[in-house]
Image 1 (tube, rainbow, N blue to C red):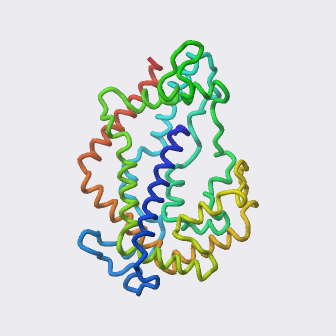
Image 2: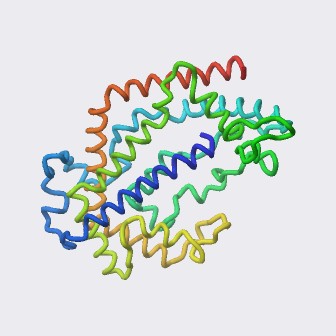
Image 3: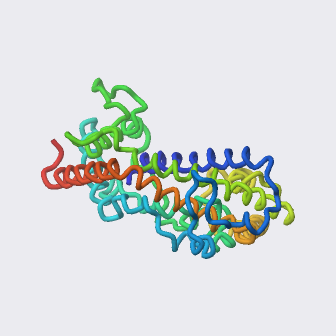
Length: 326
C-alpha cells in the first residue's frame, strides 16, 4: 500500500474512533458509573434496534479470536502487493516524465500490516503486549517497517502535487501520487463511488458499537476504574494523546522499547485490567461484530458490487504489470 493512502486510511479509522468515543462520553453523562452485573455484558439483547451480542465473544474478550464480517471483503496481502506493484510502475513512469529517477524497486510497498494496526487501537489498548509497549503500536519497534519517503526535495513536490507545474510541464492533480491512484484504482468501467465504500461501513460499525446502550455504561465504569488507580482519562482514547506527545514522547524520535517509561507501562497495565474487569472490552467487541453482521446483511448487494469493483482493480493492476504503463 502506498504511504499516502495508508496515512489517509489510518486517519479515517482513528477519526471514526474519536467521533465514536466523543459520542460515548456525551451519552454517559447520566449513566450509573458502577453498573450492575446485568449491565456488564448482559442481557445480550438491548433495545429493539440493537442486535443480540454473542455471549461467548463477550466472555472471551479477544479481538484476535473474533471474526470480522467486513474483513472478508478486504483484498488481502497478496492482492495488495499486486496493486502496489502496478502503482509503483505508474509512479515511476510519471516521475521519469519530470526527469526524476525512481528509487529502488519496491518503494511503493510499505511493509506494514494495516489491518493489524487498525485493530491495535480499535477499542483503546487491549492486547497484553501493551503492558510493555504502552500506547505505541508493537510494530513501531520494528525498524524494518519504518517508512522512508520515496522522494525528497523538488522530486517530492512533484510526487505529492505541491507544485502545479515543473520545468514548464503541468503536474497531475495530487502529483504523481494522485496519478498512481487514478490509473490503478479507477479503471475504466469500474464504479468510482465504491472506492471508499468498505471504509465507510467499517466506520459505521465502530460508531454504532461505541454508542450501543450496553457499551456506554461500561465506558463510565472503565473511567471510574482508572481513577481508582490514579489515572484521570476521559475515555479509552485519551491515553493515546496524553502519552504520544512531547515531552512524554519525542516528536522526531524513532521510539525504541527502552523509551517507554515505567509510568506509561503502569497506565497501560491498569488500562488493560480495567477493560477486562468492567467487561468493556468483550462487550464492545461483541457489539462491533454484531453491527458488522447487520451492515453486511443490509449492504449485501452493494458489497457484491464492491467485490466486482475490486476484481476490476486487480485485473487492471495485472494488466499494467504485464503490458506496462500506457
